[in-house]
Image 1 (cartoon, rainbow, N blue to C red):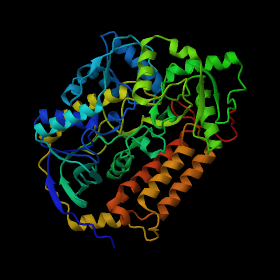
Image 2: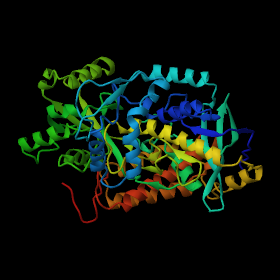
Image 3: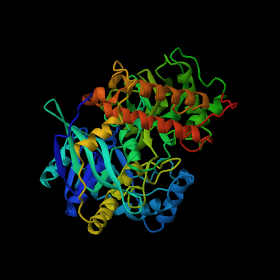
Image 4: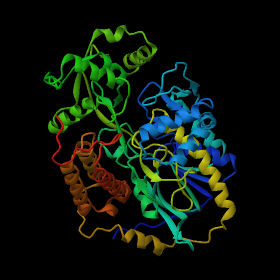
Length: 538
């Protein structure tokens, strides 16, 4: 019904999927170890959320001196609240200070921050490296990949991981199918390989309001799960305030909340009229000390009232902030650098302009379950970066996301070297019949071809942003899951295979997994808030 044939076969030792910081770090490290590698990416080299930060700089937090080992573990464990893997945490603490050198090797020019301000959610200060000039860094990264003569495919999307059980009934990687769009044509390629690194990013792209590039939509989570990997902690998504007016999708500086005098709707109605002036001031001062939403602080009321208002008033863009003139009198570098960047580079002045913010999906703490060398339950399948459930748990310290990409890129390559030395060469092939059998599983006899792939993705994002955001109720999550299942019943993935149709179907399945995880986590914890039945929040 939908003939899709494999036109090319390639062979390599390692396939890396994704060219953000995690994928590129894995690639240069693999090249240094003389591992034959193929690199694929849906976007040009130098993509991913780490190249799309929408702020002046991006920070990477690493372990300090010997005394900091115990303090760093304390910081991580406190915010993770038992929802992470201690072995992975220990690996990060031991390796992060050395792994930061990978940034230089992929084209960045990091520098160490001079102040002694702790990272978001951290109690203790430690070294933080900063990066910027992402466009220039991406150009250098492409030059580096070409100079090391790595075979790479841009405009390429992973569709399927081929596995085979071994004598212990553990699935083992045999290869992968990906589609490659070139000159307006779609090619389907079988890559014969025994090692795959997924560096495909998180799941925030399932939301209408997100701080991701458009191509990162969480599809590889479902692909990995189908191959035999496990997913965990999907409910722990960090949401962060971002501008919706006067400009959309610009990261908001939460430290400025200290100078907010009133929060209103679009008509000027005070959303916190129920608080005394002193209580409001205390809430805003506390909320100005960290960026993402968290139930671990009393000032969580700021985020919950904001999201509840937007949920009940979908015509509203966001909540409106009214500032004191004292904001621009604060000469602390943390304020002046941000405010100057905001005015000069983005064109926003917090006193001059009408300013509205809303919660945006920002960073994902859960993902594919890995061990302390980034390997999943599938032999030869690795997850590096935000696609993995790494050192994060219920919450994440600021600056740990990129650091995790660097540490576990190096560790994954180390394990891959061991795997390649221990495992005999692959003899498995993937036949046309195998491919046809797989495609048959995607056929929906009741599918409605009037529901296009782009319409499906847009609907998923609208629904997730409305009902699986900061403010979550059992009723809304249950209705959302029902809606996602109905969309699956209507959708025909293969009809739109040339327009991301299969990949967007996988994103739909990942969205269902996220909502299921939110329903199963009945207790509010860290970045997950759940209003249970018969509870109320005013």
